[in-house]
Length: 121
Length: 115
Image (cartoon, rainbow over the protein chains, first blue to last red):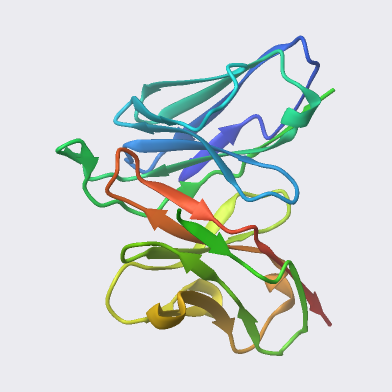
């Protein structure tokens, strides 16, 4: 496998279910991202992990729980979702330059996976 | 606050015609700018990026974009459109140097290509 892969590609779940989305990058990157893409809306950044540390939580409801066990894998655990959470969930990765004085030095391009189409019934 | 505006929600062009997709940004510092393309049901593929240097950037699939600081624009162009170019196109500006590096995306322009 090359690039950024996401599984499953499609997921249908009820509001009481618990499921997880998986993302894996094979690019040697050290930063990973979750985005939500809904119809008629710009891509919404949800979470960012740099060097396995969560550096951004963009006011995401707690029914979405990310996990980054290593720089190559990123999960999004889902529980008690709402129908309005139905969307395309995209994972991305990039190569970051590391921190200097609390700020990341430079960055590289974000590369995206194919996404998971989530439908909440 | 940083923002990206793509004023055209939907554009239709004939195959073989030229294409220009508009992108305007608001950003206080020197921007890093990107164009991505998304085919139906797929993720985003990078077309091209501008970090510094030559303001005319060449990308994949025959696309190019020009950074114009005075107009805060980064328009995407292609001289001759192919049917396979039908997709949604997203402009993004990179916000770097903070606690998290992130991209700010526009709402996208959906391109239809007529035979």
